[in-house]
Image (cartoon, rainbow, N blue to C red; front, side, top):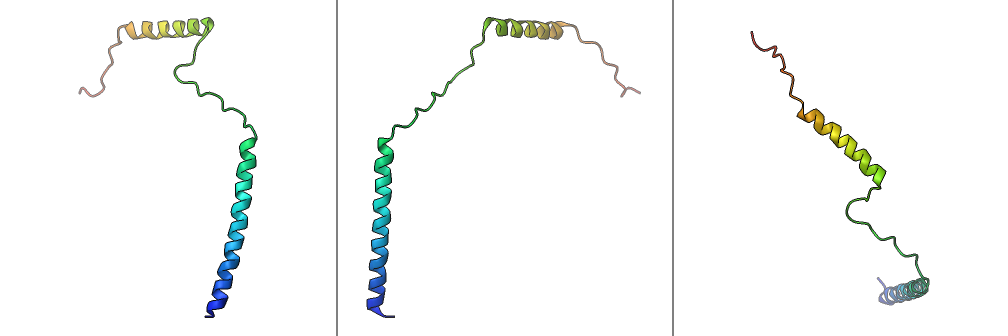
Length: 81
C-alpha cells in the first residue's frame, strides 16, 4: 500500500468532515435564533369537573352503593348431592 496515497485519502476525508461539521454548526446557530413555539404545560393531577358532571357522578355512585347494600340473594348450589 502506498503510504503517500493513504495520507492523501485521509486529508481528503478530513476536509470533507470539516465541511460537514461547519455546515452543521451553521444550522445549529440559525436554528437557535428562530423562536420555537412554547410547549403546552403538562397538567398533572385530576381533571376538574363542572357541577353537572359532579351531579352525574353522584347519582351513579348513589345507585352503585344502593345496589351494594341490598342483601345478597342465596345462591342455590348445584354441588350438593
